[in-house]
Amino acid sequence: MTDTKETASTVDPHDTRKRIFAIVASASGNLVEWYDFYIYAFASIYFANQFYPSGNDQVAALLKTAGIFFIGFLMRPIGGYIFGRIGDRYGRKLSMMISVVMMCLGSLIIAFLPTYATWGNAAGIILLLVRMMQGLSVGGEYGTTATYMSEVALKGRRGFFSSFQYVTLVGGQLLAVLVVVILEMFLNDQQIRAWGWRIPFVIGALTAIIAFYLRRSLHETSTEKSRTSVEAGSLISLLKNHTRSFLLVVGFTSGGSLTFYTYTTYMQKYLVTTTGFSAKDANTMMLAALFIFMVLQPLFGMLADRIGTRTSLLMWSALSIILTIPALSFIGSTHSELAAFFVMVVMLAVSCLYTSIGGIVKAEMFPASVRALGVGFSYAVANALFGGSAEYVALWFKNEGVGNYFYWYVTIMMVIAFVCAYKMNDARKGGYLQGHHID
Image 1 (cartoon, rainbow, N blue to C red):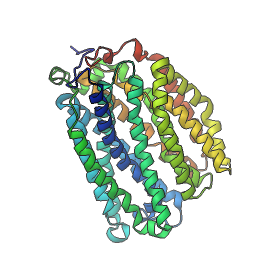
Image 2 (cartoon, rainbow, N blue to C red):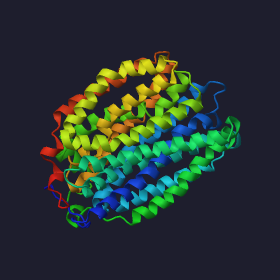
Image 3 (cartoon, rainbow, N blue to C red):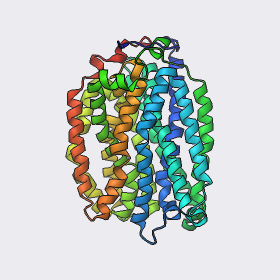
């Protein structure tokens, strides 16, 4: 028996300020955790050869570090399961506190990890293990945070409030790029490759400690009833009783994750290895594009509150199907930084139709007893298969001399996302969050 359409919160239902503080506190921890995870992707262009020597072949070295980035994503389903189960059985707050501690530890280890020149192959192996641990951590971060934020958000404004998950998620990426850009301003290329790349990981470890204390102040949104339910945190119950919801979430999240990582983490390498821009110019462009992307999230969240989440997802997937091939082809062939930047921003704006309301859409499709698990595990599976692999697949196609095949790959996945969005209901017309007591 599922506990449909219920879950209470200890947050005062009439105290908007407490709700806003809860959103800010949980989102702040989200920012720090995603910074720690993404700094690897943005800094790897400087330390790739130090852990996986490949002579002068930059693409080969990046391919290896991209593979490690992908393996971190493969750990996400396990993390989604572990932290989703903790969130449903023992509380959202505890789950979020544990995940940020794990991320902090991982960044600290990478910051002081000897390279291949000192430890040989052991350095690469340890880097792999640390990224696996961080993959577990971030695998549970999205689901629990999305669940928590959806449960404290105000009815009728859930699109707006839930958009702050991606404001901070993108903010983590933005902060990662910003730190690298600042390093490039004060250190030369040789200094960054020698030791400067370690600084961002030290910063990540220190800020994660702050995030931990912020999360200690959060209110718990799950109820004792939902936590002690027979199906609380049960993967079997999730897959058996909520199969349709699970498959739909995996379907449209696969397309969302693939496009998101294509225009964020992979785009930095694409601008360098395909378009031919310098690493410094590529990082500057990414910094500006990600800032615009972050600022747009609440606007698109408010739009979804008006037009409906299903309509928003249909617009996102349809536009992506139409624009992906011409957009990537143009960025890869242009010699104008301004033109490439403009097209990047257009495609990121299209992605906002999904990212701004992705968390709330997933959360409303599962009851309280399996919500953190349902959101986290389905998201993690999709991310592991199609999000984390985006950079690796794109670089593999390029290495094989058929880089344009990647454009078609993205387009096909967006067709699947469109079908899944078409099959789902609009969150405004019903769903497990509609009966939430804090409304």
